Length: 278
Image (tube, rainbow, N blue to C red):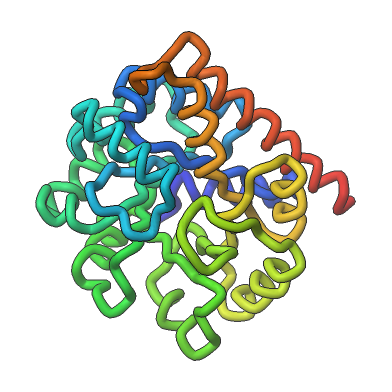
C-alpha cells in the first residue's frame, strides 16, 4: 500500500530535491493557533509535517519542545484533540503527509486499536514513537503497518552496523537520522559527518533518509539537504513561535507569520541545495 509519504518522496526524487520536514507541537500555544500554523506550513514550503503529541514526560526533547508540550497541555490539548486537528487540516489538504511524533504512553492509554482506527480516519500517514525499540514491534509498529500507517524509526550516531538491520526491519516511509547525540535543540549538525552516516544507512535500506536535530538556519538546511533525502526542523520553529507569544504565553497577531516566515526561508535554503547539486 502506498501512503502519502511514499508518494511525496517519489515526487521529490523526480524533482531532484530533498524534502523539508517541519515539526510543530499540536495545540501550541492553543488549538486554534496551532491549526492555523499547520495550515500555513505547506504554502510556506513544508513537504512533510510532523506533529508532536504533547506528553508530560518527553525524555528525548530539549527545553524548547518540552515547553511547547507543556503550553499545549495547559491549553487543553489531548490525543483526541490532536487527531481532530489533523482531520480538520485534511478538509483543505489531502496531499501533504502528516506524521505524529511522540511517546507510547498516551497511545497506550488511548488504546492501540482505537488509536490506529482514529488516526487513519483522521488522515495520519505515519508515526514516530521515540520510546518503542524494535524489540517492542508487536506493541504498535506491526499493528500500525497493518492499518496502513508508516512506522518511522530513528537511527542515531550510535546505531552501529550490527544494530541497524533491527532498526530498519519494519521501518517504512523514511528513516529519521538523528544527527547529534543528545536532546533536541542542542548542538548543530555537521554536514560531512551526516553525509557519511546517510551513506552508511543507505547501504542497508532503499528508504529515504531524513536528517533532524541541530538544523536552525537556511545555510544549515541547505548543507544537510545536499547530503540526505530530507531535512527536519523542529526546535528552531518552536523557538520562533515562543518568541512571538505575549507575556502570558498567548498567541499574538504575529505568531502564525513568525513560524511561516522561518519555514519559507528554510525551504528556500533546502531548495537551493538542488541547484548546488546540479
